[in-house]
Structure formats: structure tokens, C-alpha cells
Length: 395
Image (cartoon, rainbow, N blue to C red):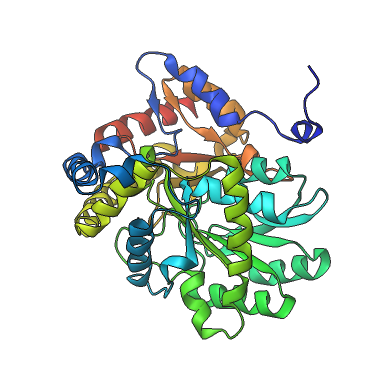
């Protein structure tokens, strides 16, 4: 068979390939990027399902509007208002996870050869998605405070990208959080160069102690002319349930209209049953308690992993302790004659019964092969300590 040329630029996910190695009994996995299923509020979701099926079964089980189920759009509008964003229900569309929002941005914005700026490193699926539509990806360097805005400005001025894609809060894979000062600078750059900024925010509610700075979208009210240059993608996957596949996109009206048209072609609409369930869940007011629980549990696990990494691997690695999200981003230093190749280290780790994701696939260009990602979300403190102990043996 002769497949579409666009597939020539896309590789199979290195993470998916790694998962094939995880069938070995006794493996402790820090590889996944998903939440702990033990954290799901099953009772609350069951209650929401029952309400969806008793109060409006016809609407919940029928075809729906491509833009989204209106009661959910109203709840999402209120949810965003609680986070400092004033958006009407008509100012957002519901997507099948925030992943679909990224795909819709690719469909509506990218022509073959267009340049798109992404962080180095960034979400692997974004690299694959944008390349599928023919984008030339330009990497912007980051540090513990997120994208380096002085470097970003140079890249915008030089490449004139279709848009800039950022995960500013507890990034995947970096765990980094863009500082308040840099968030304001990003908005100023958007206005100065009339460049669309895509803010992907699936992790922003997963902070451990202090809340992160307000979203770029929220801050846009303080920078005249910037609101119409922001597309914001949100998701319930990391805080409620990935299985519901409920996300949303807030964007300028013209972009939303084009995205809605493309969504109509691809899936007609996100599951109305899932949307009705999510709407009832949000309306019931259970989200604050759910968030408080996951913040506490993930915060404890992050502290345990940070302490274990320092104890077991010492100066063989360097990392910044994450303040939220699901990930540690670690770099091998080569100290003491240890390896600086995370791919090689991953193979040794599997032999010792522990798995993680090497960092190279998260770079659109010039990968740092000494980096790797660890997720603490799905292992309890005991498993974290045991797993990091195995990493110590593997190093």
C-alpha cells in the first residue's frame, strides 16, 4: 500500500515502544504520563452518570452540537471563571480531550512548511501531531522557570511562526513552570509580533503547596490586544478521569469557528454522555475536594521521589524538584564515571526491574540524550522508594 506522504515525517511513539517491555513481572514503572486510577472519584462520577441518565437521558444519549453540550460549556465557563478567566459558554468548544484541541490547531493553522515554535523539551504527541500537518518545528530553550523569553523573542523575530506552543505550568516532560514575569513577557511578544500563543494547561490544577502564577490567558486582561492572540487548551483528564475524554479550547472566535468545522468532519461531537456526566459532576461541586485529595497524594509522592533520587543517585544526576504536575525531569551528569546516555540507562534499569522514559524523543531537534522523565503519579511512596533504589543499582 502507498500511504500519505505526511506519514513520512512521523515516527512511532518511543513511549509506546517502551511499554512493550513492561510486561515483565515485577516491573515498577515510572514511565506513564497518566494519573493514578485510585484517585478517581468513582462515587461522584457514578452519581453524575445516574443524574445524566435520569434528568436528561434523551440529550445525554443523542447526537449533540459539535461545539459541545451546552450545560457542560456553562460549567466549564464557571470553572474557568474560578481561575480568573472571564469566558462565556459560547467562547469555548468542548474537545475529545485536550489532545483533540491540539489536532484541531494543526488542521486549522498549519500548512506544509509553516514554522511553529515549541519548547525544548515538549510534549511528544504535540511534536508528532504538528509534524503530521507538515510543520517545521523550531525549538525554544527552557530552564526551571520555563521558556527563556529573550531567546523566544529572537526566534519569533527570525522565523515568524504560525504560532508558539507552550505548556507553561508543570510542563510535560520538564515539570517547569513559567514565571509570572515571563508570562507577561510572552503576552507582550504576542502583541509586538502579532503571533498566536497556544497555552496547553492540563496540569495547572495539580499544584502541591503554593498555587502557580495565573494562566497566560488569565493575565491577558492586563496586556491590551493580547486576548485575541491566545488559544488555551484545558482538560479534565488529569484531575477527574482520562476515560471521559473531555477537554476544551478557548480561542478567538474566528479560530473557534474553523476548529468547530474541522471537528465536525472528524468526530461530529465529543461523546454527549461523557459531557453530560462531566457537567453533572462539576455542577455537584465535588471538584474542589477531588483536587485537594490529588494534590496531597501527588505532593507526598513527589517529595518522596525527590528525596530518594538524592539519596540513591546522588551527584550522578541533577533535577529541579517539581512543585506540581506528574513529572520529574532528570539529567545524567556522568559524575563518577557513570553513563550520560539515558537510552542506555533505560535498558539497564529495565534489567533491574524499573522503567522510565528517555528524554530524547521529547525534543523536536538536537535532543539532550542525558535527560529522562520519571512519573511519580501511579506509584505509592513504598514503590517509589523501591523503584528509585533499583535505579541506584542500575546507575
